[in-house]
Image (cartoon, rainbow, N blue to C red; front, side, top):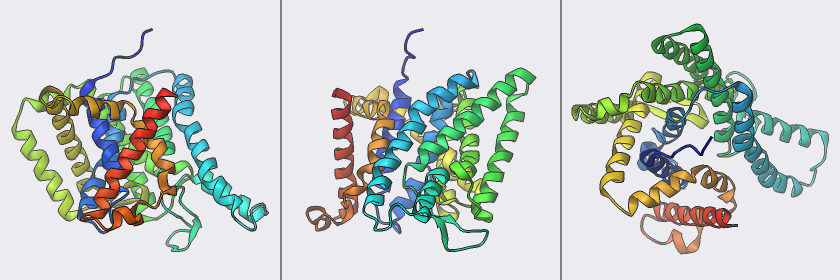
Length: 331
C-alpha cells in the first residue's frame, strides 16, 4: 500500500495550530490573546486527528501510536526530568524516584492534586508533553468505538451521544472533582469526543456542506465570540467553564480555521506551502517545543525590551523550533 495522500488544507490547519500552540505558551497568562488561542488550539489538533483517522485493527493502532506518541513522550520525559533529577541532591532516594514515577504515569499538563478538593499537588506537571499521552489514549478509545460501531451497526448519532457522555465524565472528573486520572485519561475522554467530531465531519462531508452556506461562517463566529465572553477552556488544566459553550466555541473556531485553511490553500501562494510544511511536521515541531522550555524566552534581554515582547518572543520561539525541525528532517 502506498503512502497516504496528504490533504493540503488539513496540513495548513495543523500549521496554524502549531504556531498558535507555541505563541500561546509564550504569551502572558493573563493576556486576552492567550485566552483566544487557548479557546480552540488543542481541540483543533484533536478534531483534525479525528478527521484523518480511519478505524483499523487495535493492534495496528496501538503499535503506531506507541511509536509516534508514547516513545517520544518517554524520551522527552527522560531528557527533561532526567536532567532535573541529576541536579537534585537527593536524586536517588525512594521518595524522589516514586515522585518521578508518578509524574511519568499521570502525564498531566497541570499539577496533580493530592485528593478531591485538595490544593496541594500530589505530582507536578510534566509540561506540554501531556498532549502526546492524551492523544495516545484518545486514539485507542476512538478506534475501539469506531470498530464497535461497525460491528454492532451503531448509528453515527448514537456514537456521538456515547462519546459526548464520555467527555462529560472526563469534564466532571477533571474540572468539577479535580480528580485527575493516570495517563491524562480524563482529558482523553474529552479529546475522544472532539476526535469523533472530526471523524463525523469527514464521514458526513459536513465541512464541505457547511462551506456552501456562507451564513454558517457568521453562525460560527457568533458562537465562538459567545464562548470567549462567557466561558474558558484550558484542557491541560481541566478548565471547562460553561462546558457545552466552551466546547461549542472550540468546534466553531475549528470550523473557521478549516475554512481559512481552504482559502489560504487556494489563494495565498507561498504562505500555503510554508503552513503546509509546518502542518506536515507539526508532531516533530511539537516534540521539539516540549523541550524548548530550557530557554527563558520571555526574559531574554534582546526580546524583553521590544514592544509586544511576549509576542515577539513567541515568534522567535517558532523560528527556533521550526529551524530545528528542518535540521532533524535533513539529518
